[in-house]
Amino acid sequence: MDTFAEAAVAALRERFPQAVVETVEHRGELTVVLTTEHLVAVCDYLKRHHQYTFLSTITAVDWLERVPRYDVVYQLLSLPRRSTLALKVRVGGKREEHPQVPSVTGVWPAANWYEREVYDLFGIIFTHHPDLRRILMPSNWTTHPLRKDYPLTGFDLPEPHWGGQVPYDVDPGVGRQTLRTPQGRELNESRSAFTTNPEPGTPRA
View 1 (tube, one colour):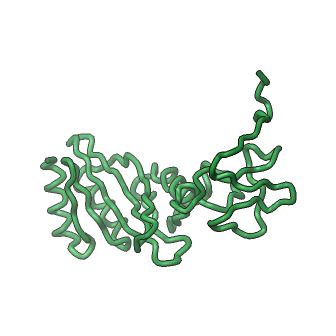
View 2 (cartoon, one colour):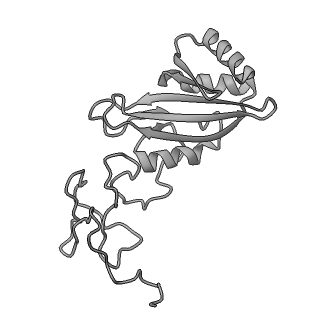
View 3 (spheres, one colour):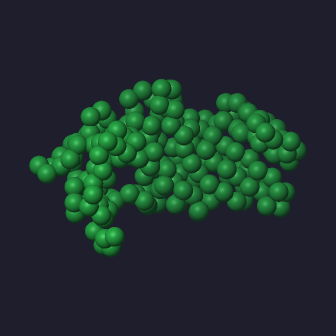
């Protein structure tokens, strides 16, 4: 067990007793589940007073049938102490399309790109982010590919839209997916048929 992380969590419980929902230990790593309203204050405290100066990553997990639906996970590293600590907040009420989490870019500037990635792929909004926009998908993409209700094979786009998105008049949601254009092709979830035409720019065999 990481004794430095244990001491940091004990100090955190004393300093912010209302912030800690629970702590979980798994395979030597400590995870602290926090309330969203105390997230920024806790992160700032851990950075300033416990040397967790390095934000390794921010990611999310979609628990489709659970309420709250999403976990947002922060992996922290103290380089001087060689100590890791995970923080987690749970967000997403029933039928809440875009749950919100406060941005931690004011604590770790590198959170900027991690938060944009989570926003892009899960649709979670980070409030007070300086530039919250998509980072991987095209700017006019209407859905979030790492949500559990996203089609496994994505959307079958008609040529010549191999690398982009044909905008929808309305968000297609889930269920039977078709592209909202006259020449659109139905989504082939079973992969029973494949196009024989190569991607534009690909040499023919």
